[in-house]
Image (tube, rainbow, N blue to C red; front, side):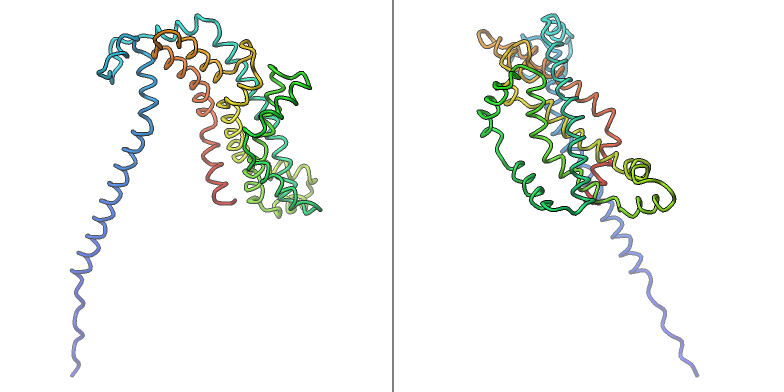
Length: 299
């Protein structure tokens, strides 16, 4: 006579599974709430800048803060643009940033290819030199940079500032691009060459498109460094007619030092400085995100 096997209890397993799914949902909700709170804290200074740029000075001077720009206008922006100094400074910053990005990417890309694809004598010394240059404090080289630019008659010029920016940004850009280049297997180029392509054609058709996100991410870094840089420009660009936007913003605040500072106009000027960066990010955000993720995984 056979004895039937006892049935397994399934109810406790279902309860345990239900509890786990509930705890996971609760954890996701808490993480989402925390993300929203942190995003609000991060975005509040930007909102406060925009809000203050639309309010008159009388409202901003009150002790009670005004969180919504009711009754605001674009008068602060109009006063700044009427001064006639914003657009020359904007043109100066745009030209310097574009020169820095293009030249920096060209040099850094070739250097990253050489480091990642070839084994040559002095390769390790070159890598160490790049690291050492990146570790040097910028303030310690101001006097030497000023003397060098003065001897070459490049003070108050776009070329002079661009050379210093390129030299400062290239080392870190090499390290960024090195990770992207190393993440693309050289076997892809070799397979394309077996199919009949030359080395140059294989690189341009196979490798270069895969490196495009890395170039965009590195270009964004170079652009931000050149756009927001203040101290080097303060030393090299002493002529008011050749000021970049950070120097223009500083001069705008200094003009208000002799009287009560009009914070509405200051915030409007800060908004105008930030708008080109926002527009630039709108064009490259997709490539930049994929480039940063790719570099983090492959580097």
